[in-house]
Image 1 (cartoon, rainbow, N blue to C red):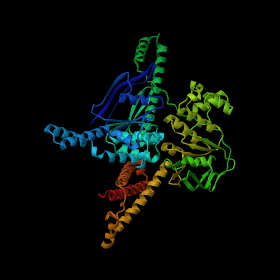
Image 2 (spheres, helix red, strand yellow):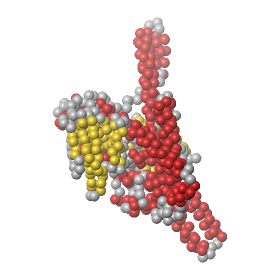
Image 3 (cartoon, rainbow, N blue to C red):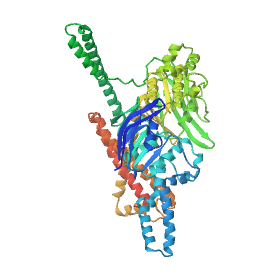
Image 4 (cartoon, rainbow, N blue to C red):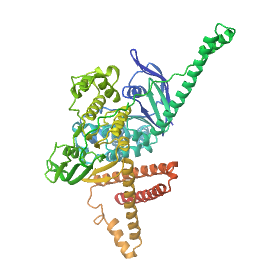
Length: 640
């Protein structure tokens, strides 16, 4: 088994130290999450491990035979079709295949024993690399990440940024390397794809090193967290939630030890001052020597965090804040959704979830009046003042400084402006920076602060945590939790939604379904509904199997009889492979969900609640039945 070992790694840019004395190791099956604020050096550290960036000190040891897959934040692709791009991941196999075919032609015309031996070794190598299966592997991974057969013929030049990220992710996963290096792999993925990726990685046999600000993803995937903070790393065995608890406990213990040491130092110094010239001067000098040798406890600076302040209380508004009644949206003949209804009540914190392309942002644009519906109506309640957060930050003045943007727009003095800005992590000289020079995440923070200061009592938020690091996300969460008005948010950030939302609405396939709780509540209820449906399907299958023999024969013949009458008759081989790959991906996802349920069942907090424990046991049994049913479907498709 290959092991990656990092010892004493250090890196500086001029006089600016990025990190020093970085030490950790990663073995197969371990999944290490790198966390830290933007600018801490996470991506540079990963590039040092990959050999793409020189480091100043230390060593990186990795078996020369180990294979590595890397997904960076900025996708770099060719100019061919999507399928051609996927095939580049197997260039060595393709080259071997060409050599194999060329030798087969030579052998057909007669060949020496040496040529036959060479051909035998070539075939052995080709089979070792699973050269006959690379096309099915492409389909399995591609379909799991949302691509279709039709997409394979499209040029990668015309793909969106999110699609390009998925292509790079698929290429890294295709070869199942010994180590996967993933830099923000969940960017541009919707929740369904993120969950598929979680299932894939949790069963991955190689080592995984990933940089992510997606805390829910880190909770599901990471077996260890390495925090890069104040130029050094600290390792925590466990997922993100465990890391948070242990880091807090360590900080509390360190502060307690520091306080005790400070009191000891104070008392010792007082003794020395009192007796340094008296009859106890010898003892005083001894204590001074002890004090000089004392290893002082150093408290690291507190992490940047939200400083609570009270927002201006928005004006009261109607109980029914916003309503969509029987609305529809079409773009160039394509129906996004039709005859959809929604009600937002005063005080609600509504989360809108669903796959990419379902129409979530379109729904928000209907609410704020940017789009009109040919059916139904949009009704905004009386005295409702809408504040809209878009991902483009159109309301920022790029030539203005951060401080002046707040002072001039909201008529406050510099002290008050600094207080607001400090809450969103703009401190010290940061307030004098030009807005156009800020990063995307910094601009998002400023745009969100301005939104909170407008006095709006209904916030409409489109991906408010995109591009934010974890401290910034926590600032936004705390601000929303302190906000006394109403909001509706489209987001793929499940940790964020869990914290701030009290109502979750899923928009999928043109249908809006409401769940009266946060994201975890929504997932639990949806899983139970799916499990109930699977249990009903399994019961139907059992009843079918127990029918009289003649009836059973006709049913079997209808399902698995001749190709003429088969459920998959008339389907092309390529389409059949796509269906099989999708079925395999669904099985993998269901098995990953089963493992997650198993972990939750082992939670002592759950075991102490008989009702929830019983519900979870039922969900687990239903998930097992669902997996069995999915295997039956797969068998029907493949004929196995």
